[in-house]
Image (cartoon, rainbow, N blue to C red; front, side, top):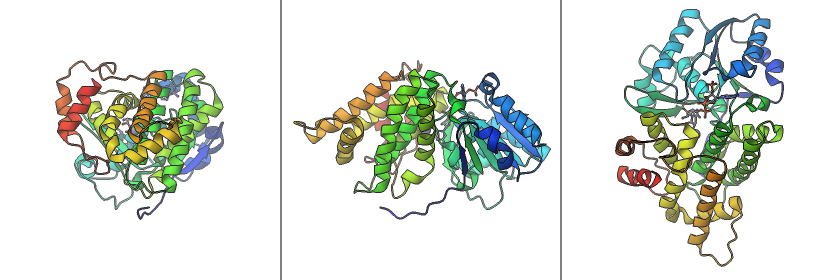
Length: 389
Ligand code: NZQ
Ligand code: ZN
């Protein structure tokens, strides 16, 4: 294993009824005024808005609402939220939603406490947060990103056509409340998309050095098997509590830094998807689903032993009579078949991308992951995107 330091500052409250039971005590230390941030309105349809509002009122909190955080949150939206926080002396930013709401809130917490331009100083390049930020708490309503338990915030700068993320431990939510029943109303498409995002986070960690026996890879295999099994159930049975609760914890486990310990991590598919998102505003998990199998067919030879292990231990590929290369490719075929089975797009065309010409610009602006088994070039990324089309 490589050397590491592990820390995760988020306190997790997990289970049915957790918001009613714990929100009041979780929010108590953070002043009288709460910025209640949410997305496009799903929480008003499924009752989450009413529950959260009631608990906050009963706890004598003054509520400032900040609705309309969009999927792929923009830097402009971050600035609007930061202005509200400053004007109202907000003590807690409460993010109620998925990755988009949580990421936007983390960036707001930084922007409200910083005098300069956070995009230039913390997203274009890594910055140092040596000052207090506004505390963030999260209530998750859609499973996938794991943003509830890390300091990651992925923001889109629309003017510059860049979507990018950084993970600042100081931006970890102070608490995360996870009630699997809150995800019962998530559509089959978004369930599959979020579920694939979990799988992607695990694969992006698993397929990287070191390849010697290490506990992070063992945990990753167990998590991948759990995601595959429970995602199949959740897309068919949206109200299956066991499947929803497993997926919810799988998502957190994939991104709470535990499985990354001792690993290099290859986030190249995420780099490619983020730029695809910057140019097309595509759905995060759907974009990843299109890219992954093709990317893996480009790199499997450089990480052959791990792809063989993946095929056998995650997909139960029967190795008898097959060469290592055949086993590895059979594993990637299983992944591609699973993507189709759960109803996700398999080509960029299905993802709704009409203008093939923009693929060169996407490739040109992608970050290059240093943890990949095979270091990419803009030219190879463009080839991958064309093959995905
Ligand atoms: O906006 P509303 O109306 O709430 O609808 C949302 C949205 O349309 C809907 N939804 C949420 N909860 C629901 C629900 N619909 C019905 N019932 C519910 N209970 O789901 C849709 C998608 O929400 P969004 O937050 O955009 O999805 P997700 O959680 O996948 O977040 C995606 C964003 O997170 C970033 C992505 O790049 C993308 O910008 N990521 C953040 C990461 C992190 N911070 O660690 C890591 C990830 O790799 C990822 O990059
Ligand atoms: Zn992701």
